[in-house]
Image 1: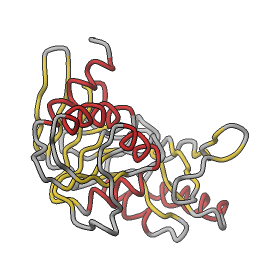
Image 2 (image 1 turned 180 degrees about the vertical axis):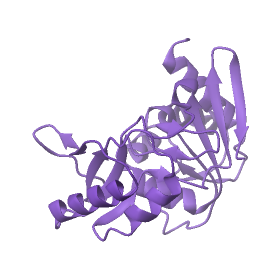
Image 3 (image 1 turned 60 degrees about the vertical axis):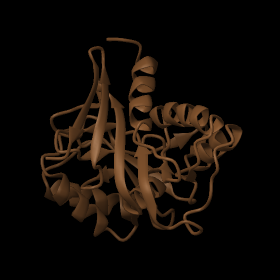
Length: 232
């Protein structure tokens, strides 16, 4: 397979073709999103006019360094298009996201957008979600009670596996919104909709990394070129 960075750049530039002058953009987080941001910066420097909402502080800093105009979602609460990557994506464009720790803001921005384009390399395509650990953003208060409730909800759906607190250095990883993340290695998730509902029913869960019914289409880069996959 071609260099992964080159594939990400190829997918990012293909997605950039859907960005029009004057658009209100949701701008994602992660290595693939960063490839898009760098390509977007080139277009902005050449005269493209856009306004962007960043899904993380990391994305906002990169955009600022490239002179990409950024506003808050409060200032611009309705967006034309969100462009982001994914950790896994299935044929129905259901996704697992949150490997970069920005899943809450990414989901809020995606939901505020009329359309969402997902940019991935072919290694992120799966038949069934679950090989990538599912990130679950939780409130720090009552962490153990929330952990046990998640474990119980998953077991009711026949799902097991390790659920671990994400770390950063010697301490826990803290999201931009001040929350913790549990990474759940459930393995194959046969019913992502049922798991989504079960996790949302746990009081300590702020959000989870199952992105369902949000992507309009995916741009997938492989050795043989770029393929566009629309939702079934």
